[in-house]
Amino acid sequence: MNYRHAYHAGNFADVLKHSVLFALIEALQAKATPFAFVDTHAGSGCYALDGVEAGKTGEYKDGINRLLFPDLHAGSARTQPLPSLLRRWLDTIVRMPGNEHGLRLYPGSPLQVANAMRDSDSAQLCELHPEEASRLRDLFHHDHRVHVHERNGYEALKALLPPKEKRGLVLIDPPYEAQDAEYRVIEQALKAALQRWPTGVYAVWYPIKLRSQVQPFHRWLQRCGSRRVLRAELLVHPDDSPLRLNGSGMVILNAPWKLDEALRDSLRAMAPLLSQERPAEWRLDWLVEEAKD
View 1 (cartoon, helix red, strand yellow):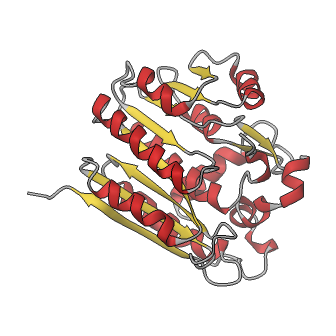
View 2 (view 1 turned 60 degrees about the horizontal axis):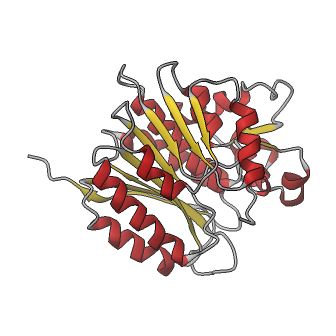
View 3 (view 1 turned 180 degrees about the horizontal axis):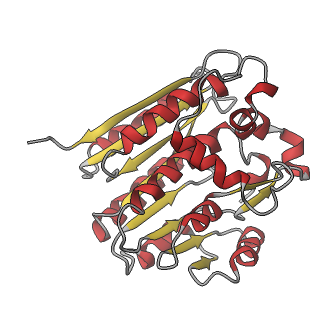
């Protein structure tokens, strides 16, 4: 309840999370039938990069700014054009109302998805913090496709799944204030959700500090029952210190067909642009992949 994403909006972890999220939404839009989006930890939906919070940390300067303005950062200038997936994602941010005269606003996951949704698609946004939920309602009060729930997102999954559209995506992106214990909560939520909606796509973002903290969660995923679990990670520091955010990852259960192909070039291009004291490292592999005939 003490976490405020406004301090971290647009950082290198957001770059990974939201580029993967964009690829997932594009995969869902490949079919004409409507889809549902469920966000268990939605936040306030949009963040001012020229605000007090972002100004205190400046994390966006080593994140989204590195992709948009690489020549401003020593050692991060790009020599090759960005992959088309990254270019399309960045275009949605640059063209957002409020960014006409430079990058002033950074959209959170709910707004990025809503900006991409069709009229027939829907979004269910859960946010427990009253102030954040209030901002979220204000942001979407004219959008009939979006529904805001001021409640625990894990508990809300019991009521929201399966959605009436029968296809879609659940994003689980908690602040990990409970640290290691958060993974056990996620596991229980995923277990129940898969029972209610086994064909849904589930994307889970996680921080990487010590690799040993993440490994039990990955082992659980390998036996969770999902036939396809894709892992994407980006590390800007070695994963051997609990004192800072060294990297982050996304795991996608029931990953759409060819999602790995869509993400590979993006991760390869992001790594040198987001490198800090050392070259950034990336990983894209299958924790579970159903056997091909």
